[in-house]
Image (cartoon, rainbow, N blue to C red; front, side):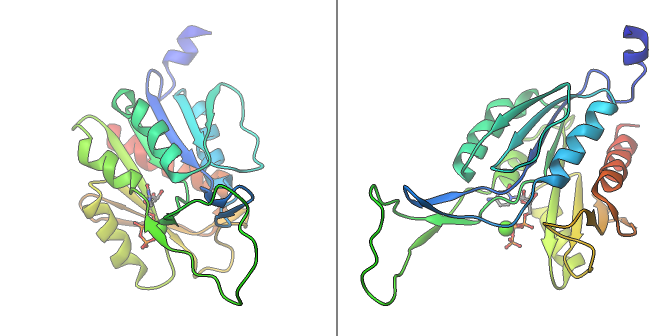
Length: 223
Ligand code: CTP
Ligand code: CA
């Protein structure tokens, strides 16, 4: 029903969410990856749909299944995620960069499977492009950009540093210190900082509830 839809808080808003890890190829059968499950990004996408947003979910390799009423784009590497994000960013009102993007990738990808030979093997790695920082550098004043910061130490300072360096509107600090938090777990412990560096601390919660808290913080910015 259209009038119900129109009354939803994010009706008419185009939202992009990234989720999951990226895989960086070493050779045709191997990659460098990380333990991100994709759960947090998928929970965010589902919550944004519930709030009436038009959601595009850009996902690295995960076993998660998306909910209804969203567009899903699957990618593998950081470069593919950058391309997918760059293609639609200018049309989006809100972007949440939840993916655990690889910071480095093999500098040379072997065409054939690397055979074992010596007792040690050195892989040369090069930095990937920071997708979030790239989007932050081209963002206009009407767009909302939300990033995550995954930290194990000096976490608040690092999180605030990322907010400023990457030109974000909100940064969600994901505390890996907390027992119930992190990649594989069903719960997360977050702290959100806004541009004024005001801090909101949340309890450990299910990722669905964390998604609700993050969306509530975004709705506050729209007011
Ligand atoms: N990010 C990104 N592109 C990258 C690396 C990270 O878009 N190549 C994004 C992540 O999706 C996240 C934010 O940047 O929203 C912070 O990621 P994080 O790994 O916590 O910080 P980094 O800036 O990569 O720094 P470091 O890993 O050294 O702490
Ligand atoms: Ca990183």
